[in-house]
Image 1 (spheres, one colour):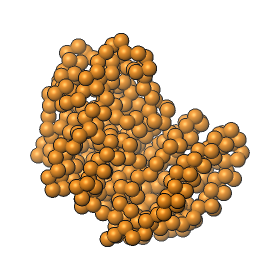
Image 2: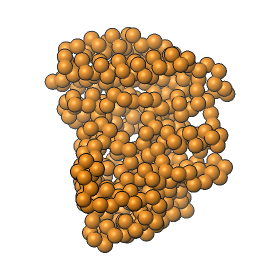
Image 3: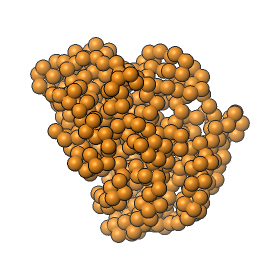
Length: 437
């Protein structure tokens, strides 16, 4: 365990992956057992201190900012048990390690987002999701959690508990997750079909695309009428793998090395952004391949950015997208990243973005270091008017008053927070804003 108030400044300084959130902690704590977590939290509660658990830093909000005690969970990363399709792991395990362990046991996560560097705790606590009509957030696959409450008590919570629908997606406000039990599925192979199309063509066939594919999403390239369609479907065997060269060309060279250069050029010469987007959209080529599910879902992201993502009722997706060209054309700067659109089904988790409805998720991005606030605020206004809910790990400007209107179980969640952390040991400025102090 590490806890030293005289740690060098560099050891106490933290910055998230996107580079837009940072803090200097008073103490950095690295417990290796549940008992150590409980003892540290109990000590902090007695002393009137605050503790903030931090994962891999892939949230763009201030959800993991710790100005007092930062608790890092990298030592809590072991497999605990596999019982049929129920897999229990320590909550600090990164998704990429989870995926490898599951594959060794002939299992897989039923759905994933497009990166795999988040910890299990961070992914479920912020509402990480993939795409697919039969899926919701990763938290919907959680069967039980073990967490340390604000008093230092250790609670095991499963579906028999009235706390379950709050604890599965708790945005770090209820306690420190130390163990998570996930319901997995037999390992499966995906056939990925990716191809450029006109945006109007995608929107015209949207209902059919969603219904006909296990996992469906698309990207729209600003300043163009072009989109990139992505369809992933279950198949019996991986008989069409990408060649090593094509994989390197697409995932490493074009998506990262070349795109990084394009972003730097666009940042320095804004007038080049629109023509470069048009060129990129027309240069896209179709590809079809098969691979293990997590290797299709997840890709390498080395070009850093900031992001806002909004969930809206699925029937509102065309209205929301139609507002974006007007917003983008009116900005005093250029938008360098494509817009990502995904679709999920409903769940019953209280703070899940998809609570009670079929959802469309629209994610907008901007290259790190480039201006973004007018873009993000304008798009948020559109989504809020449609009843939209912001992703807990992506940038937004909402507060508790406005979020209460968006989440039917908001006050029920606050009641659980009062029960599990009445002294607000786990709060920070972000939680004070979105939940109230």
